[in-house]
Length: 439
Image (cartoon, rainbow, N blue to C red; front, top):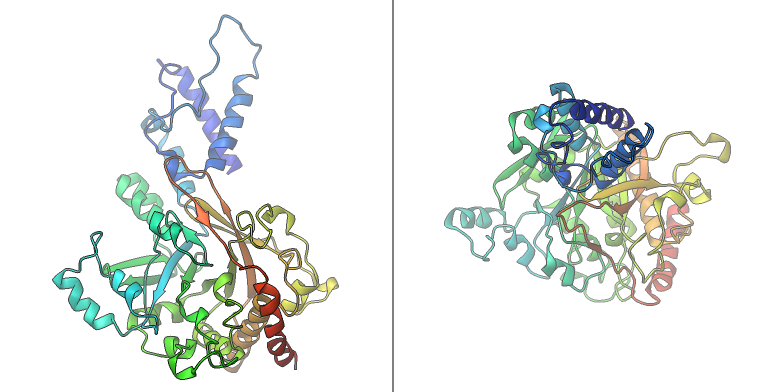
């Protein structure tokens, strides 16, 4: 990024040296929405330092404000190599691709049905035929977003806009041939099929992350109902084994079995105090379903920086770098074995997902439901891959989500994780799971 900023500074000076350069150096032609706001802030700083390096002349007008306009009118005049670098930076990875998991539920089939509806809530004849085929299957759909989604009373993250990078890359392919060329076809590709839209989405399987969202009526919040803690008859619950064991759509099975990096929402791995904690047996089954070829499993925490209920609304990723005892236990290492691996950074549209190491600062303990879930998943995946003599798993990693400013795009994400006092109640229920895990 620094090299690119230096190139742009040189290009800016080149434009000013051309006829009409000062008059035409206002921004236009390339939308700022394609590049994170931090890019422009750094770019603006570079311009400012270069522009004022010479002796000031009170008779000259000040240099143009590069932030004054959202577009760069002379972008086509830039050297082709520089234009291509800008397009490549706009679509650079690793990237996050977020999808809803739709499935038959004891709550009903409303979410699955909405995957096949148009904006007015109607289903065309062609889509109805597909709906009849997939209504009893587990399949993937685009993330539900918008103001209606923000208003929902739920304890999982709600987005005004889909942060998935595949949408940005798809838009870049349509901008012009040059932009489309910059979005290169990956060497190792995985494909997501959205039956409701009859759309196939390819992404870089070696670098990018597939983020699965089950939602508040999803599988991960139905796991323990009636089975582990006896809240009600287990015959009325929809356990994870019932959801993921069958029937998967053929396309979803192919996608998940081939995925190298998968993310899950931490808020969906534990439930309200009246429901209880995810069953260890169901967690193990989920691990078995996802382990084939899996290299990294990310758990995504939306609370830092936005959730007031858990008092972490002012918490930032930059202060969560310390590798504590929980991190070492999760990765089976001693203090002397700590590596120097840099934290992962995954890019979305209006979102940056940053890996953190200080699990204690997140409020976790060795009995916290999320930590118990992480350890159980880690143990299951490693065990399954060892049995198959295909040990590629690098571990569980925790991501926190930071908002990026993007002109013209509402990047609002709301998160209200815990009703008052529920975390302590759930942590107590997780104790039995923790004992079984450590035994």
